[in-house]
Image 1 (cartoon, rainbow, N blue to C red):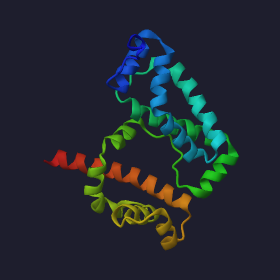
Image 2: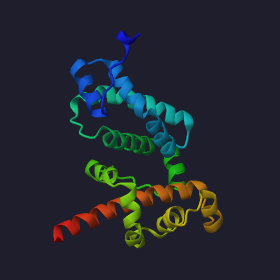
Image 3: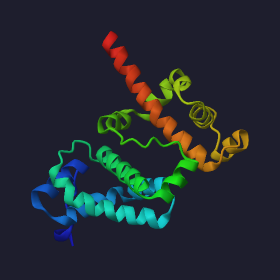
Image 4: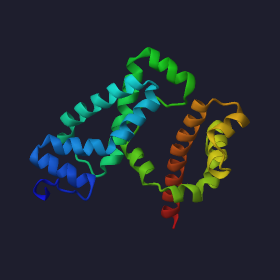
Length: 198
């Protein structure tokens, strides 16, 4: 019945404002549900275990429910991505078996990501990434450069790249993700220097 239809919100930030104003936990649950696939997927990527990823997703829901009222958030999606990555890195640091597993497969930097850096990454569009990729590719680590080039510029699948390089599929996924992340930072820096000199 239309009387009971949920109010539609134009953005995550608007929904968040209404949650903070009303304290209605259902509003926060709706906000979290919109992004739960990304949260779970990120946790699974870092932790490499479905049960660990599910537990981490629930922990994040409870943590955010407690913490979010004390935060000023302009870009909810970017902020959430930052919090999820930090939470996973914290779990990896505490769990030695996870650390061993991750280090054997991935090139993760274990320092805590910087929120300002995260916002710069999220602000770089895919079109801008592709447009500036060739100029910035040589600045990446060799394994990242090779996988990013094969995947984006030569349209190779993960399996094609594995056959060509002998990297595992997990390694390729990591090299591409980290390479893309580093490229966006390089492009942002290049844009900043151009604007400064203009």
